Length: 123
Image 1 (cartoon, helix red, strand yellow):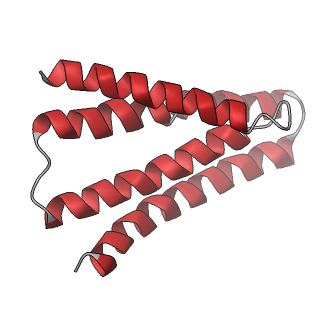
Image 2: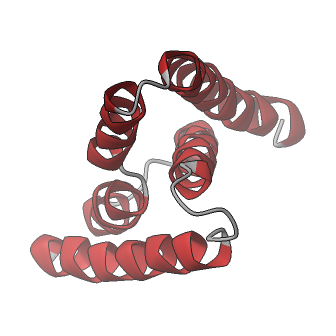
């Protein structure tokens, strides 16, 4: 049952990731869609982790669906890594450095704010 939950979640997350990349394809050769999905994914994971403690632990199939499947395929570290390398290869050292820094900072802020929000709002 759990492997089916991961598979279905992975399908949903991958399709959502593709949709975001199509939606944010306004500027070719930019990493906006990767940044967006990684920050949103971190925020949603923070929300899930914050609420699971409040409303009872998530069951294994639900956790597998949401965290491993859906968010695991929605976010993308490999694409983030390649886009940063590609910017450096193109001689865009400032842009590559900024992309890495802003991805890390916004990703951490997204996760922390999602978690913080559940601790404040769901009290």
